[in-house]
Length: 357
Ligand SMILES: NC(=O)c1ccc[n+]([C@@H]2O[C@H](COP(=O)([O-])OP(=O)(O)OC[C@H]3O[C@@H](n4cnc5c(N)ncnc54)[C@H](O)[C@@H]3O)[C@@H](O)[C@H]2O)c1
Image (cartoon, rainbow, N blue to C red; front, side, top):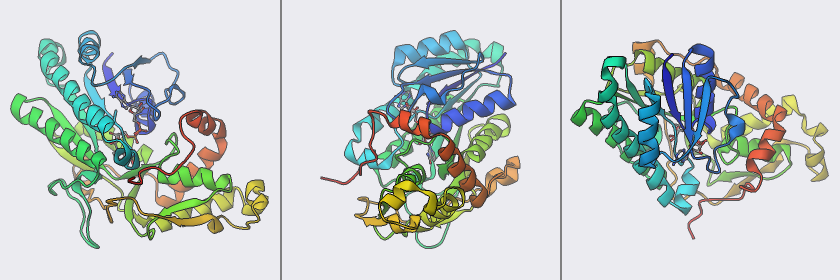
């Protein structure tokens, strides 16, 4: 049985990917996760094929022992500090995990893979999960392609860009069989409620203000997490070694449009008239909760991904459109209020982050 090492597998996208691997492969899965505020054992499936290790991807001794003992066929690196606002408040953790951590995973692979090459043949893959934010901000037109130059704006995107460069350098210099995916904004089940969609969804359910940064017209390209994970699996199985693949669904929305869409989907499943918290605040619609707040420093205006390469070469296509994806997500959060409470407990109160002092 093949072993797949999934770093960050107790976080949002990583845990969705573990569920996909369980459903679509017979592999054994080793999850390496530090369990920061963003990671939770509640996200990790309880399955005999999943082996959980709590630890830091920047811990060289641990990483090397995992390579030696587990001999993974694939390494899929999701582990990261992932929230732009937190990178404004404290960039050091982003350097530690996103850059040093990725470097240690690459070093471990470089030193160990050769020792079991006979066993794995040329099947070993190191897939690094990255973001479209490395490309910086677009004007009103144009799309990010795989050859768009990097121009990161935030400490988060700068750290992800740096990691992407290390991954590429390990392929060029040492011949490590790497793949890099750069994906647009994700939404869906198990997303920590600091990010736009779950934060506003939970605030709306609880009758709290829906914060809209600046004029609300910043544009992001939204993809359901399960479609992202399916794309990553296809890249692992069929992607050309050394290549980069953009993943996105040509689904651009302003933040205001996203929040309006959320309010509409929530109204259909939990009508405002039946929401006690909203009624107690004297409000009659979710839209009345919208509140403009100061913008994020250095807020990129527009991201949009050209995902035609992964469609053309690998035949990947998203299963969800924005309507079906948001509806399923709202339903999931309404049905998992205990999870929402547990992951925030003692860690986060949905306060505003990322306002430079
Ligand atoms: N969320 C998005 O919209 C999006 C879009 C494109 C790319 N990405 C990338 O996908 C990856 C996963 O993002 P996410 O949204 O699931 O993030 P997340 O914050 O939900 O999860 C990150 C996970 O990494 C773990 N972690 C953090 N530091 C670690 C360390 N030093 N060692 C081991 N584990 C550590 C955390 O405990 C957590 O479980 C990240 O690399 C991110 O840059 C995210």
